[in-house]
Length: 97
Image 1 (cartoon, rainbow, N blue to C red):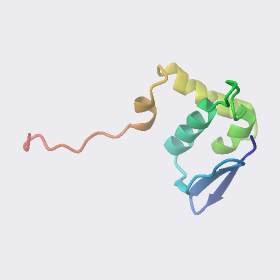
Image 2 (tube, one colour; image 1 turned 60 degrees about the vertical axis):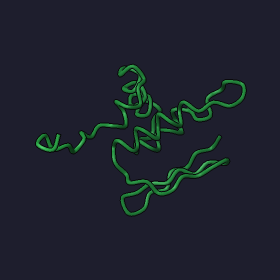
Image 3 (tube, rainbow, N blue to C red; image 1 turned 180 degrees about the horizontal axis):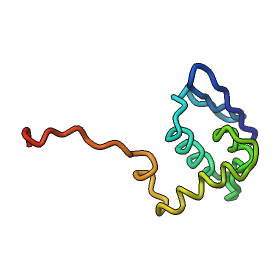
Image 4 (tube, rainbow, N blue to C red; image 1 turned 135 degrees about the vertical axis):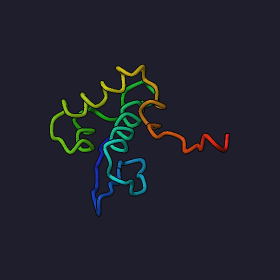
């Protein structure tokens, strides 16, 4: 499946033959989350929908290695999205608790 990344005003949008996203803030965390999410997608036969070369557009790279490196970071962290996506600490006031 063909993948195209559009960048405007420090945001990016992903366009494919089957779907497109809204514009998302262009941050390292958002690029990594989208790369991993798209790489995990498979068709009905279990074939990956997007190659690392296609996904390299998200890393602003041109080679598959840039996307592969980012994806492997996800694998090294036990493939947990909470560690990939949720990196902020809750704003809880200890006095209130």
